[in-house]
Amino acid sequence: MIEIEHLTKRYGAVTAVSDLSLTIDSGQIYGFLGPNGAGKSTTMNIMTGCLSATAGKVHIGGYDIFEEPRQAKKLIGYLPEQPPLYLNESPREYLRFVGEAKGLRGEALGVQMDAVMEQTGITAMANRRIAALSKGYRQRLGIAQALLGDPQVVVLDEPTVGLDPIQIIEIRDLIRDLGRSHTVIFSSHILSEVQTVCDQIIMIAHGKLAAFDTPENLERKLLTPSEIALTALAEPGQVERLLSAVPDISGVELRGEEDGRTAVLVHVSGQDIDLVCKDIFLAFAGANTVLLELTPKKASLEEVFLELSDPAAPEETEREEDAR
Amino acid sequence: MTAVFRHELRGNFHSLTTYLFGGCLLAFIGLWAMMYNLQAAVSNFEFVLANSCLAFVVIVPILTMRTVAEERRQRTDQLLYSLPITTVQVVLGKYLALLAVYAVPLCVIAIYPLIFAQFGEVYLPTSYGSLFAFFLLGCALLAAGMFLSSLTENQGFAAGISIAAILLNYYSVSLSEYVSSTSLGSAVTLYVLIILLGLLIKYVTRNENLAWGIGFVLLAITLIAYWLNSAAFEGLLPRIMTQLSLFERFYVFVNGVFDWTAVVYYASVIAFFLFLTVQSMEKRRYN
Image (cartoon, rainbow over all chains, first blue to last red; front, side, top):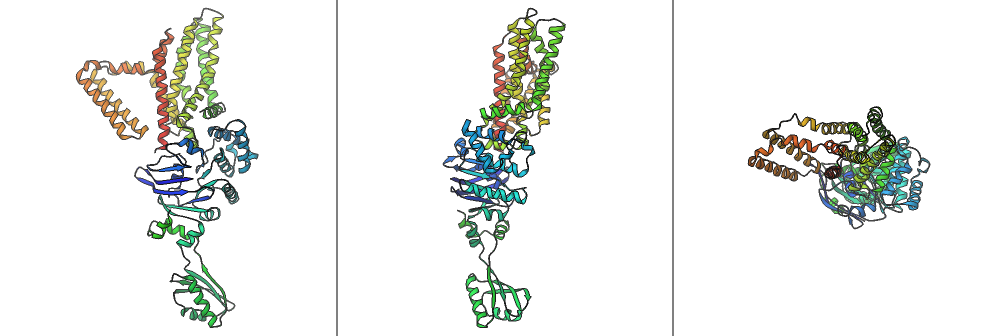
């Protein structure tokens, strides 16, 4: 659906996006993730024809955004970071203008306007002044505008920024809903949001593609679990003695002691955590000691994110392979 | 383009400044018509228009200041860039909406000569010829004002530089009497103007080679021309200032001459500033 090839954008001496290439297929929700200033908005602005590129190409549904902007833009609906609204107008007037600019006329325009207002839940506000609407409703109106003309791709730049928790949940639900009928690309610097909503995560840092995969794969590939949470019905001394016999353990951290139970966190140095779990289980079983919990701890995407966006972090070959 | 035009038109008629513009224009012309045509009982309506010209200094910036600057301030220009319409369509739509707003009070004014004709001898061809030229003059100034509005996101600043520019143009003929008419003075001033033009091209197109190229070629031509025939530069500067005056062309119509070269001149000025507006908006995309 969208092909970005060797995209580079420089603002004077600053390189915002550097040789970025990726392919986005239709019918999924893509999360564009990166810290502030990573080049998310720049990439989205170029993708939607709002900004030129220093080098590289972008194709939307086969149309070059720079050479055939009219056809390419018809396939895309875009909500910039700040919803581009005319505050003196009502949502209905505003949507009428956007619809007309997208080539809709007469009855088709009316039907689509009603449909997108219904979908984004702003029908009740249709005739108020936009200036009097809350931030959440303005964001919805921005999304409604992007949906007009039934584009195949909807690009949303940080749609949940500045909203209260309830509004954030509503917008996320809306994005999920949109994902059923459109390709949705939305950017965020909030991990949990991307993790819960997206089918695919595109991580960018310092204008470069850092990772591109499903949330689950990213976690699995980038950070293998290296810790095991363990709770046993035994004295701390005995737990430590039993663990000392197990190979590939680099350290044991006492977490708590209560009613004869001991909770510890085991740091694993080896690669195969399942093998370590097995060895621990057998060691405790052999000593007739009851294990209440034995859980390999998965790293959260948060840690992956921090690692990837850390400028000091060394480049990993694995990351390069993931970067399709 | 029709979408932008209709949207702008609706926006204009929802905005107080539009009514202020129409009101000021009607008041100015009404005032002069009362003084000339009614009190002094002169039958020439064109004199009223000639005297009302100064109103443009105030009313054109009122109308044009928000056109593009407001889009930038509200960040709605991003919407315009992302819609499947070209910048040329956006600029034309906006400009035509301005013209429509400008045409409304002029339609009212167009009735005046007919009314006066009921009570005396009014030479209608000159009246309507002048009104036509008055319209063209306004169109050219609106195009210039729109361009100035596209340079900034601050409406006040856009209005300020528009007032300064129109005022300068209005008095350029009077000022031309005070500038140096020696050939050296003219040449030096031309050099300065060429450098300014180069800077403007660089700012608008962001193309340094183009700016340097044009600037250098023009400077070389001027230098060679001055070296070959310095007498031709005698009084050149005042002549240029007179030629650049949009108002001076209008007075020809007031004197009863329908000057086609002036019509072409106004059309070129309009096209020039619309082109610059498009370039200025496109520049945002290429920053």
